[in-house]
Length: 262
Image (cartoon, rainbow, N blue to C red):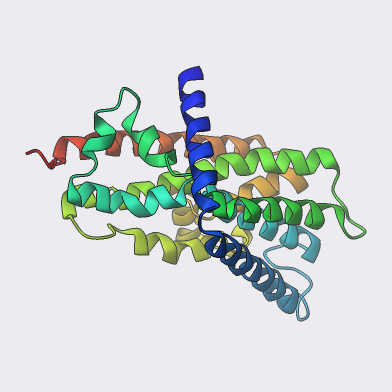
């Protein structure tokens, strides 16, 4: 574990050094993501001009939920996105060989090697939005509830990464340029709405089979709804199952992988 931590610290140092060489990109990404955050908050503000509840949640609760999925997006952009975008190319071109010969987990290496330092400021802004949404207004949450929310969102981030990477790893067999990543981006719209609006078979699908709806909604529900053991077990169970599935699909993909030296 210590070896992996030291390696990751080297990744961080390299990434920040490189980001400072392209300062225009650094500041442009900050501005671009701030616009994304403001647009999402305004979207729900406008909806609440016409209704008091969405999926059974008040405006205060929905804005707290929105701050959560914005934080997951920012964290993914910071820790994983550059690596996710490069994965299909590594597989198709045979460049994955470089990662396989290293004396560490190849999945760890391809997942976190490139830290997006130019998105780090956006991550800090997203954390600030979580505290703003939690502490503002007459129904303010406690610091403990906000920290608890951040803890659960960490598991939501893991699930987000697992789902995305599994769809990209289809490239091992299809040799397409993106795998099924377009399907993932379509389904992110499900994550950006409270899970309470979904009903019937579609709700079961987006909370179990392709569980995008639980990534940010369940952490929010575990904070401002009464304690629910079934909800917590479902959430952590799904995260655990999809993490195991990601590792299993990676190993199957490596068996099908044709390296550059083949």
